[in-house]
Image (cartoon, rainbow, N blue to C red; front, side, top):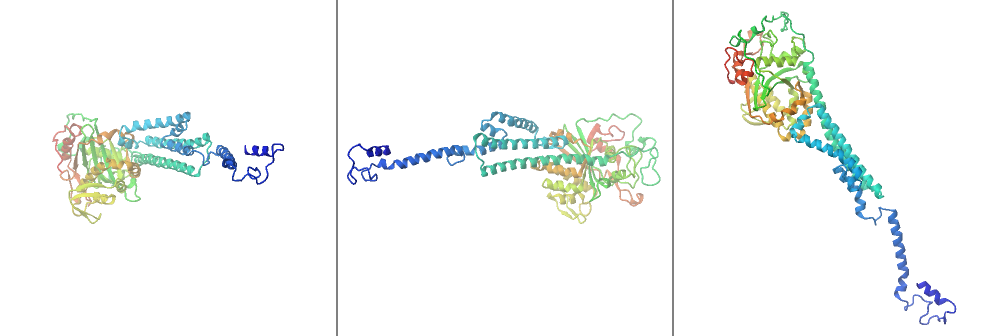
Length: 540
């Protein structure tokens, strides 16, 4: 407008030509008489031109300062949502098809996990003893991690692609941190599940060592003695029954009743020492642990390790110099013969002596047992008698004790000095086992259960089908009573060493053992109904 007015005023014939310097002259635009609006017009035009250029620049550069902050944050928000739950970031971006692709598998996995957890955390924990279950968990954890990582990365890149956004280094770094977190979380859990899977395989391998290949079946003149002169097996297997007072009569004995609710283990503590291994282990601890899952009653019976001159369940007897704790070792190394593998022989032999069917055995190396006690944070017991033993280095008084792995091993191995003997040691072993069971059953152990099972794989062997462990969770959590008995005096006595070649041994009074067996297990005992058997409680 201002330029047009100026041009018109200068045209020839437009009127009298103003004289320079006169009022109203157009030859001086900056004169005081010029209106203020006319002087600002160039500035306004420049501002409008700058705004137009800025708008075009913003359209070409979405990351410019003019871009809304919410739009710039969209990729990070989408990635964070998919980090929390696969598919949420895609849903936030309006990409419903991709949201369904990521959400559906995550929902299926979540439903499966919830179903498992409805059985309880301990059910899930013991299910890990099933090698296929542990492997399944490891695979599921890896797949879930991959799904989360893919969904998180996809949401981040989709937001940039659909909204034509540039990558900010800070945002990219934050998303990378989310992806690293996902990998770390899932790798940790998957590694634990894999270690448990390997532990299950190790336990099975340990079992094969102890039950691999039965020794040749004994013949009528088979030797169960390391001497050159064989000990003849009796013609009638019933003739070697322990004592006349419990000998079978010619009348048929009442049929032994099998309690379908009872599960019985032979717990064996092997002292293999460093580098000795299972093949040369000595079974220093032999404990029968039986539970009636219907009543919740648990019975524990410890058999002395020095028991000798015992009758064999397959006929014949062991000579006086052979101790029960050496039986497995001698069978593994071929010094004695049995119709069954070494550890199965021990299981059946103790079942025969105690008079109760034993379903499974579980052997643990006592050296590794210390690591397991440390893994649960130690155990607490009440010590009923002071123990002072220079050989094991232990000195504890009466009262409550907190035992770490090293102290616990000294506590259960000590048999010398004040408070020492094999029988008292066996009683302490039972107390330790009860304390460990309570500690393992506590919720505080669950976070470390994978490590505990991994340690178990190095030191435990058993013929118990580990996949069935979860079936006994409820029974283990509802124990109503625990009764303990050690087959020390009066059930055992020490024969004169002149009759054993100078070896310190003990022998069972089988008449008293038979009375105890029927007193504890009634018609379930193989001694039930035999002449002279009078049910009795534990006297040790």
